[in-house]
Length: 440
Image 1 (cartoon, helix red, strand yellow):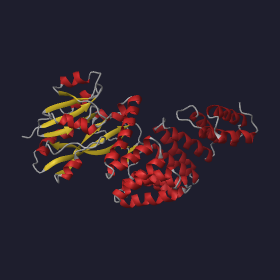
Image 2 (image 1 turned 90 degrees about the vertical axis):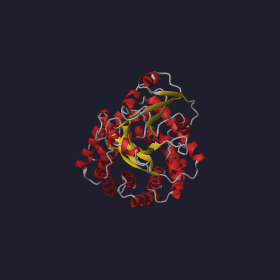
Image 3 (image 1 turned 90 degrees about the horizontal axis):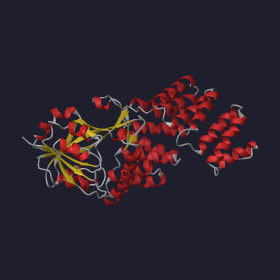
């Protein structure tokens, strides 16, 4: 009977590693853990599960670290997990028969990455409602899927590549060996359990490694797309991201991901006509792509084509987009079309689902004013001024709403507060000048 080894790299995973190791009890014949510098109780917990410990110097390269651990493996097959992951129970009934198949050298496993916001997206995947297939996941409202070859035959010719988003899939394919997908999943809790500082550190690391990866693999579609996403979503640099997405399309023209992200990027740059062409092409390649449909809605909303925006958001929601933001934008488009009651209900529902999503307050304030509810609009706009991420725009919006509601003194006070926070903002100063108000 073939044997199975759990191979891991860890650092300060004491809060979750017991759950991970418990999930492979009775499945893995051996556990080998490479520690890259833990200062908590990670190693003591690992020892309690009978794990073999290897000390691995960290060199900003996930593949190198995993290969260092892989070098100590002795079993016939390898499965790799992280400390903040857990193997689903369904794996127990499948793995033994899978590794007994002499024709297959690797299995692609889907990871469910749990998030606190159904509006989350990553690498072209929109978050989905969590159906709670494992009790440990019940507190988390949504997840987004990703896939990697996590289960593979131990062979000196099969090893991990790439400094981030490391995989053995490329090696297996280059060797013309067979790999296929399995039905069970891996549960990943890092996005919902990491402290804010730790999550920020991870994201900064992944950003730098994504740029490093593309330098080493300039003709890899995944590497190029990943670098673009890092620039767009992490660095917030749409201009820097666009060349990567254009190159990704050239490398893999039939993959919708490059077209979708190119469309998102062009939308952020205000190039709506070009963005429309890219998103329509992405939908022609993959009509079931929810992110493409929601992006189409965003473009039409920016172009004030509210009828087509409604259709696009409705399509995205039917395709599984559970984002409160898409629901709110659908409501905003309906309000602009005169369907004020149904539109405001959608926006209020979205806000109740995600009360910490600050963008929803901007949508609510504007839509409420259009719906003939100016007092509600002003109240929500005021509340937004005390929340995180406030900008000069929010002071301008709040002041404008109060002016249109004939609350001139309140508007003046908001403008004064805005200029104290953003003294160089021209729009705030222009509004003050137009009112004949002297800035403090």
